[in-house]
Structures are given as structure tokens and as C-alpha cells.
Image (cartoon, rainbow, N blue to C red; front, side, top):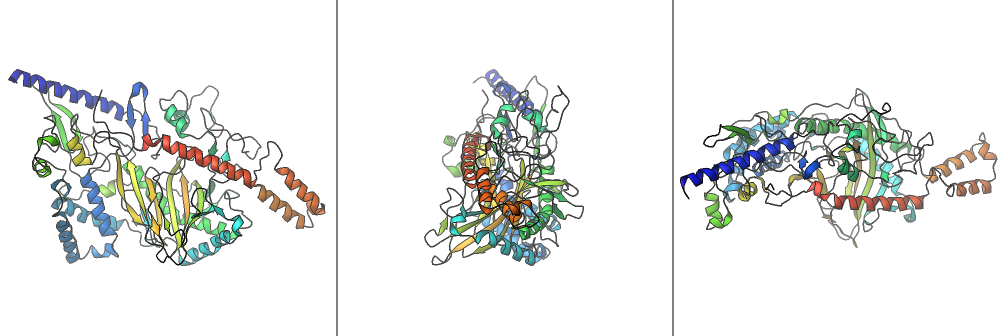
Length: 632
């Protein structure tokens, strides 16, 4: 190849890269919906002209994920926050970490700077520990937990009151459909949900499915368009994202939250007259407990929202001088490109290319005799910053729920194992709800367990495409980010043990999965019991709730009528019992009735489950879309 041909080829490479970078920037800065918090169904969108943009969290280098794993391994130790003040222990941890690197391939090793950075960051994590509640950071950003969030008396009361929901005849126990008789629902939002076009508001109007101008969106003047970037605009036909929003919205069902008022002190009180599927008279004691538990979770949720508010508020900033948000642990470099006859062009701040050149030759595995030779050819690998740079503190922008009315969806469920069914196979990767519910964070309290092995909750997240350095450089992307051509950019974020007494909260943009567990003693029964709280996005207008929708359970109506029949001051007490029963029977058959029988509610639940199963399957692309490394 002549010198002129070589210059021409390099010029073409530069032009291709510069053009691709400009196209990426156009997508990265396409107006993102201006919601405060990231939602799993808004993290990915297809724009006009077959262009794609992703507002998911930025991809992390494998090196940074390994740094998180090392940090979490240390912070999982008992009294770690005290031990970090002991220089001898810290040196022991450093030596152990360095020893663990010896047998690893070069690209997988943590360098001395990385290990030092992790150790230097530990005091920052220690300062985040709340001595009163025990709240501290978990395995990854915005995951928080505590092993002493609830007092012993509150936990005891929760166990006692929840046991009353279990203490019913076997024929009345609500084993979750398709759970192999292992999951017992005590309170579940899929039973008696909002059914669009059937469920009534308190003024008897029907609840309509979300659409271009749903009745439960803020009122607008005639002819006025919704604010650009708002939820209403996002689901309106003139939005570039309409088709995705429409696919993410159920046209049939929505879980029904209850409204809770959060005082300045953090104390929580129920605003709604009831919690769906939990009778307020029969279970008044549990109502009091749930309010206290929700109140205890307020500081957990505030920490979750504060960290996603800081890390992901501007989700993509690869073209700025500072490192991409949430990636401040890894050293990045200002990247320039230059060709003869062209000015130097600034093309971003990125992790350096492993080959040491930004637009040089692509290297292929076939070029190398073996893996070791390939690793030896690497000129640059990701490296940690020289010193700790307050990246943890900068990832948090405080957000308070005090003084707000929040909407929470409550769930209580048990997993029961028997000698005949001694193992729980684990769950699937999922996020909670659909776009209708706008769930922004999830919280779980594990209030009881017996005779089961250790169980974990694992997390992963779909990220934006990593900022690869040149087209087709698959080796670089694989070594730096663990992603190959056409792979799905979902990165594992670690896992956490879910032992009894642990409270846990995380953002709903993270997918989660229950790991398998089994009986310790196969001759005895075992169980695990949880209370879950799904937080509706508090930065958006409220969705239909138990405040605006009366109970739909026909059994509750019958119970109220039977109570009234026992009250001598009630006119209903004067009715013959037989007539009372006839009235109750007729309620189920009235066309357009606001009440739903148990049999109908169970049928609706199956429809809801089928709809969401199909949704999860068809929208998997949004959670794990393909990383192509190529422009066409």
C-alpha cells in the first residue's frame, strides 16, 4: 500500500468515526422525557427514521464492576465500618485482594490503584451508615438495606397480625396461580385491580385506560397540548415515543395503590380509607402496623431516590469534559483525532482504547497465537483514578418525601416448602408493574423464615451501548465492558442475602431475581415471609388509588350488610335474613355493578398475569437490546 493510499484510508477512518460520533451525540441529546426519576419503560426508545436512543444508565467497565464487588465483599463483613479504622486490618484486606489477583488473566486483574481506591472509598461508605436505623449502602448504587430498620416489637406485631391472614381454612387460602403451590398470597395487588372501563370512581364514573388525554391526568384548557416531555405528552400521538409508551401501558388493568401522608417527622398515616385486599375492620391491627412499616421505609426510599436523582438525572453525558455520571472511579481521557489537512477534533471523554490508538487497525482474535499473546498485545487497560475523588458523595442529590402524599402498593406473600416440594427454583428477571403503575422503587421486608437455606436477591440493569472506540473492535468492547457484537448490554450488579429481619430497597430501573433456595431439613416444613412496598413515582401526578376508587370486593359489601343487620339502630336490621341473602346474591348479577365477586376477581387476575407475561416477553428488547457496534 502506497503512502498516499495509507493517508486516504486513515482519512476515511477518521471521517467515519467523526460522523458516527456526531450521530451518537444527536441521539444522546435528543430530548429525554423530563421526569425526575428513571423508569424501566422509559430507558429505551425508538425514534423516527429507525433511530434508537437509550436513556438507561451508562455501561460500566468490568474493572469498575469488579471494584464494586470488592467493596461489597468488604462491606458485607460484620462491623466493617469499625474495622476500617484499624490500619492492620486494612493492610490485611489489601494483601488478600492483591493475592486474589495473581491467578487471574491480565485483563481481569484489579490493579494496585483500583484496590487502593476501593479501600480509600470505604470511609465515605461508612459516613453514609445511619447509626439509628442501620441503613447503609448495598452492593451497587441506589441499593440500600438495613438489618435493624424495624423494632423488635413491631416485627413481632407484624408476624402476629399477618398470621391471622394465614389462619383460614385450606379452601380459602390463596395460593398464587402457577406457583406450584409454593407461594401463598396474603395481600396481592393482582387481585381486584383497576379494570379500565369497568372499575368505578367514587362519583360512579368509569376509570378509563391511559391515553392521549386520560381523565386522571391534570386538567388542561380546551385545545391546550400537554407540556412537552410530561407524562401526558409522552403518551400522546404527537410524541415520538408514543408507540413505545402505548406498548408499555396496559389498556386493561392497573394495580391499585393507597395514599399515605408523610409528616415532616417522617411519620406516616394512611390517607385512603382502605388498602386493597385488606379489610380495614377485620384487620385494623395490621393497618396500624403497615403504616409504621411504610414510615420506617421512608428514609430507605429517600436514599434510593436521592442516588438515582444524582447518578441518572442526566443519563448520558459522554461528550462532556467530566466523566460520564456514575463512572468517576475509572480514569478517562479527553479523546482527540487528527488527520492531515484537518484540524484537531475533540470527540469525547472515554475509557482509552486497549490498543493504544483511537482509530487504528481493528485487532481480531485470529491474529494471536493464543489468549496469552492477545493479552500481551494490550497496551492500555482501564485504570482507577489516582486518589479517591468523592465520586460516592457526588452521586447523591438529596430528595425528601417529607410533607408529601405518597402512593404505595402493598403486598404480603409467603413461600412455603415441604418435604414433597423441598426446593424453590427461584424467580425470573423482572421489574415491577407496567407504565400504568409508574413504580419508581421497590422495598421488601423479610419478616420471618424457618428451615430454609440462604437466599439472595440478584440485580442487573440494561445500560446504554458502551462508547466503543472504532467500528468492529469487538475485542476491545469485550475486554473493557464484557460485551460482544450483538450481545445484550445487561450488566450484573451483584446480589444481597435476604435473611429474616433485613429491609431492602432499590430503584425499579434495576431488574431483580430471587435466587433458588431449599429446605435445610428435608423432613420438616420451611417458609419465608415478606412484606413488599412498591412506591409510585412521587414526582408525577397521582394515579387512581383507594382514595378515589371504592372497594370492589363484593364480600366486603356482604360483611357490611351483615354487620348492619346486627345493629338494632340500622334499618337493615329489620329485614328478614332470607331477604338479606337475596339482596347480596343479586349484587353479583347487576350489569354495570361496581362490585366484583371472588370468582370474577380470580379470572381477572389470570387475565392480568397473562397480559403482563406477554408484555414481559415482547418488551424484552427494551431490557436487553442488541449491541451491534456497527452503523449502516
